[in-house]
Image (cartoon, rainbow, N blue to C red; front, side, top):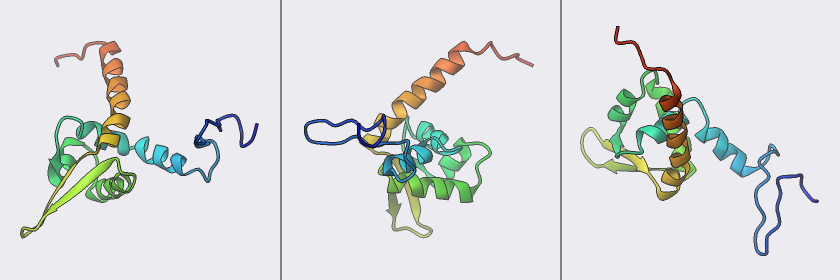
Amino acid sequence: MVGGSQLMQTETTKRYDVFHTDCPARDMVDHVTSRWGIWVLISLRSNDLRFHELRDSIRGISEKMLSQTLRSLVQDNLVWRKVEPTTPPQVTYGLTEFGRDVGEPLAELFDRITRRLPPRDAG
């Protein structure tokens, strides 16, 4: 076996070996599973949001961290970015098809967790 236990040979392609530090897929996994990456993907699953709407939907995130997270997710082709040429510019973000595909199991994970938690106290 070449390249470790996670490298699988198919007829035409090789799978990425995410256990190696130089694997490009590993960077993407790091971006998706970062503290804020998960929240951005889940926040965008229902509809496209402008920057401030996205910031307001994710409590506790700073504008700097949101900008950095969005930059990474856009580079990874998980999130698209549209700039309207207005003053000031209006920037809208949404999930690409790939982002929806990646975000779906994350949303299911959160749904499973919240279904299993005990009910919150009203007070």
